[in-house]
Length: 223
Ligand code: SAH
Image 1 (cartoon, rainbow, N blue to C red):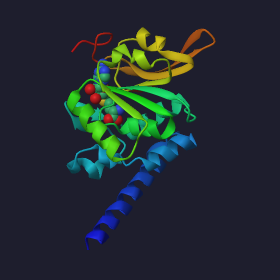
Image 2 (cartoon, rainbow, N blue to C red):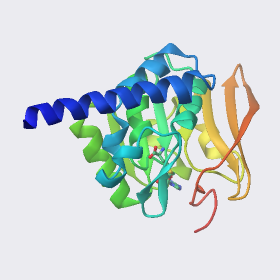
Image 3 (cartoon, helix red, strand yellow):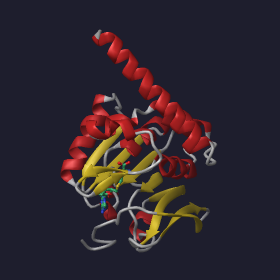
């Protein structure tokens, strides 16, 4: 009986996850097969409260406590795709929140250095990541606007909170070639930006409008 219930639960979440990948990622233009595979593997429902698990595969953010949200699947897919990870990269993630994006990155890169400023979120994210068996993640409770100097340079940086401008400290911690994706703006309007560092130059591309919580710290917004 319990086994049957468990089996039904696992096929339900697998179906929901497959639908998420088809409807919210592929249909909206996410094409990188590695990103699609990673997001079809990571159990997103494990990163939200039990009461919200039924909504975990819808294309919307969800509350994770401390006034923060787990990002919408499409935005996770888009930001991850823009990093063009091939498997050997060292990635810095700022704003780990629930740890969902961290797990997606851990599927796609060699090592993920995740930073979260809210202790309770970081502690929970770390537990979830460990319980799912990811061994290539280091998580630190810190103000990510400083980056992670001891571990720099990074091949890729993903920041999941909106900065007022491109933080120069983070650009300095990018390898060459290196790529960074982050929202720039205030709580009214933001643009998803990709920064490419290569051949001694830094190029900036603007991608789409988006809504993230603010990046709060020494080199971004004040609390
Ligand atoms: N990608 C996460 C959601 C991120 S929400 C997920 O999928 O769950 C943005 C997160 O950035 C929040 O958890 C917030 O606490 C964190 N944050 C904001 N400013 C930060 C800073 N300066 N350093 C580290 N984390 C920060």
